[in-house]
Structures are given as C-alpha cells and as structure tokens.
Image 1 (cartoon, helix red, strand yellow):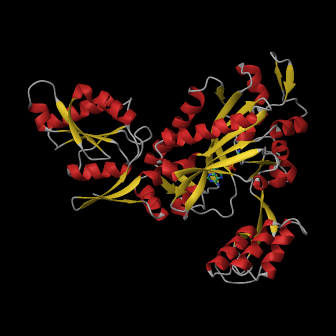
Image 2 (cartoon, helix red, strand yellow):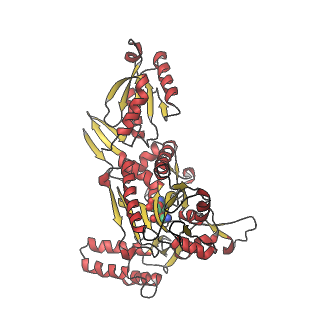
Image 3 (cartoon, protein in one colour):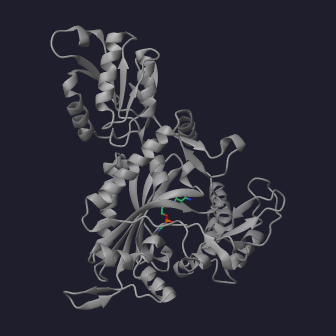
Length: 489
Ligand code: GAP
C-alpha cells in the first residue's frame, strides 16, 4: 500500500470545504478576509478538541478552576496590559496598488531573496540593520530608511512608491452604549487575548474559589486581532478562539513551574494524537523576549507552510497583576498564611489557539492511500476527537437489516456521535466516512441476522480497513477498547 501525506495546504482547504468542516465566512457575499465558519463536522471536531483541553486542564487538576469572562472589558484594561500602546505592527502602503505590508516583513523578504541569489554578505549587513531598527531614529523611521536605501519594491505591483511607515494597532474598536458620541473616549475594544479576563478576576476567584497559590484559572473564548498579513486559512484569523490557562505561583518557584508546564503541554499535544516527530519546542532567545517575560517558548507543529507556533508557554512574572494593581488601585496580592508572607504571584501562562489546533489535527491526520489499485483519502484522527464516532450501515435496503441497524443506532446515540447511512454501495459509504475521519463503521448483513444465537455485525476499522465480526452486545466494549488503545501511525 502506498501512502502520501499532506503536501499542500490547499488540499486541506478543499477537503474542509467539501466535507463541511470549515467554510469562508459570508461566502455568498464574496467572503470576509481571514474570518471562517465551522460546518457540521468542523463544529464537532473543534468542540471535541476544546473538551479534550478542558478535561486535561481542569478535571485532571484540582487546583485549576474555570472562568468565562466577557469579550468586552473596561478600556483601562488594555492600557494596563500595554495593548493600547504596544500592540502594533509597523505598516507601509504601496501607493500604486493601495496594498498594505508589514515593513519588517518586507525587509525580511528582501533578505531572503538576496540569500537566494548568493549575496550572503549583503544579506548579513541588511539583517544587522533590521535587528537594530528602532535604535537610530525610531522603529518606523529606521524601517522606512532601510526600504528607501535598498530600493525594496512592492512584492505584487513591483512599484517603489511607498508611504511613510506607521504603527497600526491590531485591536478592533467599537462604541459602547446608546449615548456614544463616537469619540475615542467611548471606545471599547474586542479583546485581543482572553488572558486579561483572568488577570482582572484574580481577586474574585481567590475570594470565592478557596484556592491557594499555586493555582490556575483556565478559559476558552474568542479573541480578535485585525491582522494585516492574514492568509494561510485558519492559521492566522481576525476572529479566533484561544484556550488559555494562567497559573499563579510564588516568585522563586516560577522557573520550575514554567519547565513543568512546557513539558506537560507538549505531552498533551502527543495525547491529542499528533505524531511526535511533527512537534518541537522552540525557546525564545533572551534578546527576543517580551519586556515582561522571564522565559518563553513556542510549541511548534510542522504544517505544510513550515514549522509554526501552535501554543506559547510564558513566564509573565508579576507584570500583569502589578499593572492592574497600579491602574485600578486594587491590590492583587496573595497572603500566604503558613509562611506569613504577602506577595504578588508570578504567572506561568499556557496559551493555545483552538483554530490552529484544529488545523494541526486535520493536517496531521490527512493521508492519501493506494489500496489494491484503488485510492482513498482518509483522516486518521484520534477517535477521541473524531467528529463522528460510528457509521452504521445496513448492507442493502431490506427491512431485516434496516431494523437491526436502526436498533444499534438508537442504542449508541447519546453516548456516541453516530451516523446512519444506507445510500450507495458499501465501498462508497466507507470512503465517505474515511474522508470524514470516522474511526468505526458497523455493517449489518444477512450472515449476522440469520445465524443461530445472538445477532452479529461487522465492525470495520478506518486506519487499517480490517474488520471483525462482533456480537451486537459487545459493540460498546470493542469501540471503547479500540479508542483507548489507538496510536497515531
Ligand atoms: N495571552 C498570550 C497570547 O495571546 P499569543 O502568542 O499572541 O499569546 C497565543 O497567542 C496563541 O493564540 C498562539 O500560539 C496561536 O495559537 C493563537 N493565535 C494568535 N493569533 C492568532 C490568529 N490571528 N489566528 C489564529 N490563532 C492565533
């Protein structure tokens, strides 16, 4: 059997659309850039991944509690967090095409082209200038100067007609309340990360959930960023979902906790069914750390677009709680009774994009296989997250077979996501479920209902296409055992 893995992102985009995983938002109006809707199978897959994370983070830790904070928050939150001042990208516009580019990425693209042409020395010099941008006249001015001096042209139009470089804030603004005057003073933002909802509720949770440091708060929710370079399907979206956990620890224990969480999170990705050789951790070098971070690393997956971040683990020190203390005037401290010591806890953050995880799961599961001269596309998803658990088919449309198939359907429905299908050849039905990632298909045939004793059916396994004949009463046991023992290939 020959097996081909995913080589091109477009293949997943097409499959996701054709099978009802993911559609472009508002497609009948021409779509909305970098915004996507999840269809029936995508909704199930996303929900299963969300539950898989929630179970691991909250149910398996008695010191991590949940939160569901609002998307809209007091505008001061974003001043305290640094997003109003610092959540910017330096942008430049091509006057000929009116297209907007990230100025630093334009320079990076130029450096890559120079290297491609063997001009390593020139590329090194330019890289040095880029690395020190901001240290001469200011970030925007320095980037503009580099673009001018090296005559870097717009990638699409080829023009050299640039505007100045300007900082572009990535937060979406909206107006608040019926009396809004439209002034900036009334502006509220759609949150660009879920984390701040956790920080501002630190005291509420402390006071009500009887937790003692170390403890964590977990949350899943929407975040919004007006990304400028927003391509690559659901990898970089303007509306997306984050699953974040902030773990509050005593200063001095932060490094150990950070390493612990980095390991735990990497193990979670493997437990999700992602092949270990497609995962790696990428620690941020000290000179690239955010000003508030003592340590940071990405968990990366090798997508068809290269190695990319799926999750970030950060040691955020006491920056966030101290900032909110300063801006709100409310103390966000912890008093350790046993040690008789008061301090502002440090925060170890685990922050993962749900949509990027869906994309990772789809990419990792995708295979095209040649089987005895026939080809099939199959999603070898971990059964624990597959959108449909079980396909149930009567071999042909005969009452006897249909009745038993419906009986099995009724019995499993509720505990499993099942799909009854009697249309088309059995081979076609298997192929449809292979493409949807359904791990088990049950077929009811005459051999099983006409023999002596208990009715039997065949259960067919998606990954290796083998089949077993099983008494109906053992179906749940077989499904449960095979789900637990599943390993990625
Ligand atoms: N609270 C920390 C924080 O938000 P981040 O690295 O900006 O950190 C965390 O985001 C995760 O959110 C990323 O690792 C990524 O998976 C996801 N993410 C960020 N921006 C995204 C976007 N535009 N589209 C989809 N996912 C995104």
